[in-house]
Length: 228
Image 1 (cartoon, one colour):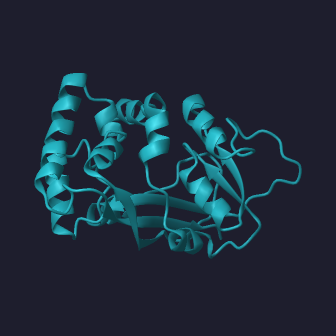
Image 2 (cartoon, rainbow, N blue to C red):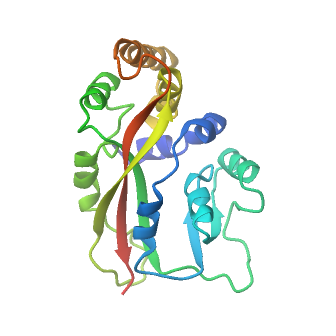
Image 3 (cartoon, rainbow, N blue to C red):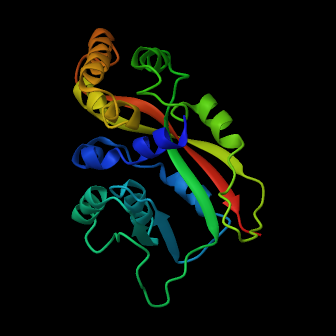
Protein backbone atom coordinates (compact mmCIF):
# COMPACT_ATOMS: atom_id res chain seq x y z
CA UNK A 1 0.00 0.00 0.00
CA UNK A 2 1.50 3.34 -1.04
CA UNK A 3 1.31 6.58 0.93
CA UNK A 4 -1.73 7.89 -0.96
CA UNK A 5 -3.66 4.69 -0.25
CA UNK A 6 -2.68 4.82 3.41
CA UNK A 7 -3.97 8.38 3.69
CA UNK A 8 -7.19 7.45 1.90
CA UNK A 9 -7.77 4.55 4.29
CA UNK A 10 -6.88 6.61 7.36
CA UNK A 11 -9.25 9.43 6.41
CA UNK A 12 -12.18 7.14 5.55
CA UNK A 13 -13.46 6.55 9.07
CA UNK A 14 -15.10 9.94 9.53
CA UNK A 15 -17.65 9.07 6.85
CA UNK A 16 -18.85 6.19 9.05
CA UNK A 17 -18.29 7.73 12.49
CA UNK A 18 -21.77 6.95 13.83
CA UNK A 19 -21.58 3.30 12.72
CA UNK A 20 -18.00 3.06 14.01
CA UNK A 21 -19.11 4.25 17.45
CA UNK A 22 -22.01 1.80 17.49
CA UNK A 23 -20.35 -1.32 16.14
CA UNK A 24 -16.62 -1.32 16.85
CA UNK A 25 -15.51 -3.28 19.95
CA UNK A 26 -13.83 -1.99 23.07
CA UNK A 27 -10.45 -3.26 24.30
CA UNK A 28 -9.55 -5.99 26.78
CA UNK A 29 -8.78 -4.35 30.13
CA UNK A 30 -5.91 -6.77 30.75
CA UNK A 31 -4.31 -5.57 27.51
CA UNK A 32 -4.55 -1.93 28.58
CA UNK A 33 -3.03 -2.73 31.98
CA UNK A 34 -0.13 -4.53 30.30
CA UNK A 35 0.41 -1.66 27.86
CA UNK A 36 0.73 0.82 30.74
CA UNK A 37 2.67 -1.43 33.11
CA UNK A 38 6.15 0.06 32.40
CA UNK A 39 4.95 3.63 32.89
CA UNK A 40 2.79 3.92 35.99
CA UNK A 41 1.32 7.37 36.40
CA UNK A 42 -1.94 9.28 36.66
CA UNK A 43 -2.46 10.37 33.05
CA UNK A 44 -2.49 8.88 29.55
CA UNK A 45 -2.60 10.54 26.12
CA UNK A 46 -4.91 8.67 23.73
CA UNK A 47 -3.67 10.05 20.41
CA UNK A 48 -5.91 9.29 17.45
CA UNK A 49 -8.70 8.37 19.84
CA UNK A 50 -11.37 7.86 17.20
CA UNK A 51 -14.81 7.61 18.75
CA UNK A 52 -13.33 6.85 22.17
CA UNK A 53 -13.23 3.06 22.34
CA UNK A 54 -9.84 2.95 24.08
CA UNK A 55 -10.59 6.16 25.99
CA UNK A 56 -13.66 4.52 27.54
CA UNK A 57 -11.63 1.47 28.61
CA UNK A 58 -9.02 3.72 30.22
CA UNK A 59 -11.73 5.66 32.07
CA UNK A 60 -13.24 2.39 33.31
CA UNK A 61 -9.84 1.55 34.79
CA UNK A 62 -9.80 4.86 36.68
CA UNK A 63 -7.13 6.49 34.50
CA UNK A 64 -7.10 10.20 33.65
CA UNK A 65 -7.15 10.48 29.85
CA UNK A 66 -6.37 13.23 27.37
CA UNK A 67 -8.10 12.07 24.17
CA UNK A 68 -7.00 13.73 20.92
CA UNK A 69 -8.73 13.04 17.59
CA UNK A 70 -8.17 15.07 14.38
CA UNK A 71 -11.29 13.95 12.49
CA UNK A 72 -14.24 16.19 13.48
CA UNK A 73 -16.91 13.52 12.88
CA UNK A 74 -15.07 10.93 14.98
CA UNK A 75 -14.39 13.53 17.67
CA UNK A 76 -18.08 14.47 17.79
CA UNK A 77 -18.98 10.84 18.55
CA UNK A 78 -16.29 10.67 21.23
CA UNK A 79 -17.64 13.79 22.91
CA UNK A 80 -21.21 12.52 22.66
CA UNK A 81 -20.30 9.26 24.39
CA UNK A 82 -17.75 10.63 26.85
CA UNK A 83 -18.74 14.06 28.07
CA UNK A 84 -15.74 16.26 29.03
CA UNK A 85 -13.26 14.16 27.05
CA UNK A 86 -11.81 14.72 23.61
CA UNK A 87 -10.06 17.52 21.78
CA UNK A 88 -9.12 18.05 18.16
CA UNK A 89 -5.54 19.22 18.83
CA UNK A 90 -3.14 19.16 21.77
CA UNK A 91 -4.66 22.29 23.30
CA UNK A 92 -3.67 23.54 26.71
CA UNK A 93 -4.13 21.78 29.97
CA UNK A 94 -2.39 23.15 32.99
CA UNK A 95 0.08 20.66 34.40
CA UNK A 96 -0.81 18.09 31.74
CA UNK A 97 1.90 15.46 31.57
CA UNK A 98 1.52 12.05 30.02
CA UNK A 99 3.34 8.80 30.60
CA UNK A 100 6.45 8.21 28.51
CA UNK A 101 5.21 5.21 26.58
CA UNK A 102 4.18 4.27 23.06
CA UNK A 103 1.58 1.54 22.82
CA UNK A 104 -0.54 0.48 19.85
CA UNK A 105 -3.62 -1.67 20.48
CA UNK A 106 -5.51 -3.65 17.85
CA UNK A 107 -8.58 -5.84 18.09
CA UNK A 108 -7.83 -9.00 16.11
CA UNK A 109 -10.23 -11.67 14.90
CA UNK A 110 -9.12 -14.97 16.42
CA UNK A 111 -8.71 -17.06 13.27
CA UNK A 112 -7.62 -20.08 15.30
CA UNK A 113 -11.40 -20.63 15.55
CA UNK A 114 -12.47 -22.45 12.36
CA UNK A 115 -15.54 -20.37 11.48
CA UNK A 116 -13.61 -17.13 12.04
CA UNK A 117 -10.83 -18.34 9.73
CA UNK A 118 -13.44 -19.12 7.08
CA UNK A 119 -15.03 -15.68 7.58
CA UNK A 120 -11.63 -14.09 6.99
CA UNK A 121 -11.33 -16.02 3.73
CA UNK A 122 -14.85 -15.11 2.57
CA UNK A 123 -14.47 -11.46 3.54
CA UNK A 124 -11.21 -10.99 1.70
CA UNK A 125 -8.24 -8.82 2.53
CA UNK A 126 -10.16 -5.55 2.14
CA UNK A 127 -12.46 -6.45 5.03
CA UNK A 128 -10.03 -8.46 7.16
CA UNK A 129 -6.81 -6.51 6.82
CA UNK A 130 -3.18 -7.51 7.35
CA UNK A 131 -3.25 -6.64 11.06
CA UNK A 132 -6.66 -8.11 11.82
CA UNK A 133 -5.61 -11.69 12.63
CA UNK A 134 -3.01 -12.73 15.22
CA UNK A 135 -0.31 -14.30 13.04
CA UNK A 136 -0.32 -11.55 10.42
CA UNK A 137 -0.51 -8.87 13.13
CA UNK A 138 2.65 -10.18 14.76
CA UNK A 139 4.45 -10.21 11.41
CA UNK A 140 3.19 -6.77 10.39
CA UNK A 141 4.09 -5.06 13.67
CA UNK A 142 7.39 -6.81 14.42
CA UNK A 143 9.44 -4.40 12.32
CA UNK A 144 7.53 -1.19 12.94
CA UNK A 145 9.77 1.82 13.51
CA UNK A 146 9.09 5.19 15.04
CA UNK A 147 8.77 8.01 12.50
CA UNK A 148 11.83 10.13 11.84
CA UNK A 149 11.39 13.53 13.50
CA UNK A 150 14.92 14.88 13.39
CA UNK A 151 15.16 14.48 17.16
CA UNK A 152 17.20 11.63 18.56
CA UNK A 153 14.88 9.52 20.68
CA UNK A 154 15.94 6.48 22.64
CA UNK A 155 13.51 3.62 22.89
CA UNK A 156 13.78 0.01 23.91
CA UNK A 157 12.90 -2.95 21.73
CA UNK A 158 9.22 -3.33 20.80
CA UNK A 159 7.27 -5.89 22.83
CA UNK A 160 4.20 -7.75 21.54
CA UNK A 161 1.45 -9.51 23.45
CA UNK A 162 -2.13 -10.63 22.82
CA UNK A 163 -5.03 -10.92 25.27
CA UNK A 164 -8.31 -12.87 24.91
CA UNK A 165 -11.34 -10.72 24.24
CA UNK A 166 -14.74 -10.97 22.58
CA UNK A 167 -17.68 -8.99 21.27
CA UNK A 168 -21.35 -9.91 21.40
CA UNK A 169 -22.75 -9.79 17.88
CA UNK A 170 -25.55 -11.00 15.66
CA UNK A 171 -25.08 -11.84 11.99
CA UNK A 172 -26.38 -8.39 11.05
CA UNK A 173 -24.34 -6.47 13.61
CA UNK A 174 -21.14 -8.36 12.72
CA UNK A 175 -21.66 -7.45 9.07
CA UNK A 176 -22.17 -3.85 10.23
CA UNK A 177 -18.92 -4.03 12.20
CA UNK A 178 -16.98 -5.29 9.19
CA UNK A 179 -18.58 -2.53 7.09
CA UNK A 180 -16.69 0.04 9.20
CA UNK A 181 -13.29 -1.34 8.10
CA UNK A 182 -11.26 1.09 6.00
CA UNK A 183 -10.82 -1.43 3.19
CA UNK A 184 -14.58 -1.56 2.72
CA UNK A 185 -15.20 2.15 3.25
CA UNK A 186 -12.96 3.07 0.32
CA UNK A 187 -14.48 0.48 -2.05
CA UNK A 188 -16.75 1.50 -4.92
CA UNK A 189 -20.36 1.07 -3.78
CA UNK A 190 -21.12 -1.91 -6.02
CA UNK A 191 -18.03 -3.82 -4.87
CA UNK A 192 -18.77 -2.96 -1.25
CA UNK A 193 -22.32 -4.32 -1.50
CA UNK A 194 -21.08 -7.51 -3.18
CA UNK A 195 -18.52 -8.08 -0.40
CA UNK A 196 -21.07 -7.47 2.35
CA UNK A 197 -23.49 -9.77 0.54
CA UNK A 198 -20.95 -12.62 0.66
CA UNK A 199 -20.35 -11.94 4.35
CA UNK A 200 -24.07 -11.94 5.20
CA UNK A 201 -24.61 -15.14 3.20
CA UNK A 202 -21.75 -16.85 5.02
CA UNK A 203 -22.95 -15.76 8.47
CA UNK A 204 -26.45 -16.94 7.62
CA UNK A 205 -25.11 -20.37 6.66
CA UNK A 206 -23.12 -21.14 9.81
CA UNK A 207 -24.70 -22.69 12.92
CA UNK A 208 -22.43 -20.56 15.13
CA UNK A 209 -23.77 -17.29 13.72
CA UNK A 210 -27.14 -17.82 12.10
CA UNK A 211 -29.45 -17.60 15.14
CA UNK A 212 -29.43 -14.74 17.63
CA UNK A 213 -26.43 -13.43 19.52
CA UNK A 214 -23.01 -15.03 19.68
CA UNK A 215 -19.57 -14.01 20.89
CA UNK A 216 -17.10 -13.10 18.17
CA UNK A 217 -13.80 -14.46 19.55
CA UNK A 218 -11.14 -11.78 19.33
CA UNK A 219 -7.78 -10.90 20.79
CA UNK A 220 -6.47 -7.48 21.76
CA UNK A 221 -2.93 -7.19 20.42
CA UNK A 222 -0.52 -4.73 22.01
CA UNK A 223 2.72 -3.35 20.62
CA UNK A 224 4.60 -1.64 23.46
CA UNK A 225 7.75 0.49 23.27
CA UNK A 226 9.46 1.96 26.35
CA UNK A 227 11.25 5.27 26.49
CA UNK A 228 14.74 4.78 27.91
